[in-house]
Image (cartoon, rainbow, N blue to C red; front, side, top):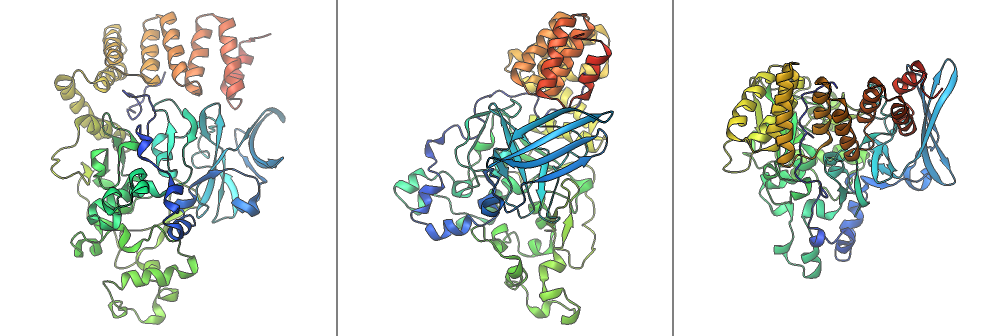
Length: 549
């Protein structure tokens, strides 16, 4: 097994519903519509109000896109298609070898994710597991193309929806923590982003409306109001749930840093690609001159959809709350069409992570092309800590260093130093114990180090570690010690936790084959290909070893 320095999903002490265990205080957006009909109808036309819906095949009535699409990908010779059948939207993947179709996998699309402003992606349910589909619709090209990331990896229909992502694309999802896309039934108590995402649980307000029992971001301090937006619009270079917290623990009106720690690598500070809106805004001269009063809702009305034909004039008026037309020194003829302030000072830029997509630069440079502010070194910056907090949670910081090491190898040394310190000061933390085991496996292949790594993993399990990754790494350690039966047992435990994880099933098949247990290996490979027909490696393994002949 290839070990990676990736601790984001290594440990969880809570495998219950990850969002808002106490749902009794939620009323649902329909409860708000009775008193706030006009604003509710207006919000439903916004991108947030259309963030998630049931997938249908009627483009004129709902998606307004053609149901049929076909994308052929180069090696490994895949063809992806979208089509409608009996009023239901489907996607399929097929593969060829030597000019012959060797597999075709077809799945119903159950949910549409996205508003269509930039594009639409689709989700399919496999049992109670939700996965992204390979094809997305991109509005800028008015065409189907591969979903983000599928140009690099053939995920097939087995790319689970992360809890942190679905928490921002829906109102009340019910994912099960660290279970590879497993959801409660139903997966969503409310589909698109709703009133309570920004105003907090509304049961008390719906039954007896007062200003005191509902959150109105417009009446919050600007920083607290921005924290509502930052829950989804500030990703940083590393975004870590604090120990013992779940995404649903955040409530509007509270400080985001009490639930989620966001870190930025200041060596890369500047015009980042995705979801860096607040950090970019705080770099702007406009924000600094406002002495912190400029906030997201200074310019954005979350209840209102601004038509593109009106956006230049609408946002120019927002600029004119501080500036005047005379503030711009360019002659009118040299300005952006329609005297578009934002078009010049907040230009849209293509982003690397998502094809055919551009986002607004919230740094508000005075002139096009002006570089970002000077770098601040290569330290991790804890973005927007809550009042009184001097240092970030050490376990969250450790996980942030682990993530940052992927982008900046220099952080590896800092990660190891902090891990060594926490191994002394926090020996009863399951993440720390699992991380110590992982470090030993990565640094040495000696039997003594491997045995020591196993001790750390066992201790992590005793302390409450429950993720598939711990059992997979234990399986790797046991295999190094030639304890193959125990290794297989650990892989089967991991598979119980994540039954749709391709890497676990693949490792199980290979290990059984290496042990000479051909009948069990054959069954494991057949199960793999039934669930993941795109796995050419398993198909080749089946042929090369003459299994099933």
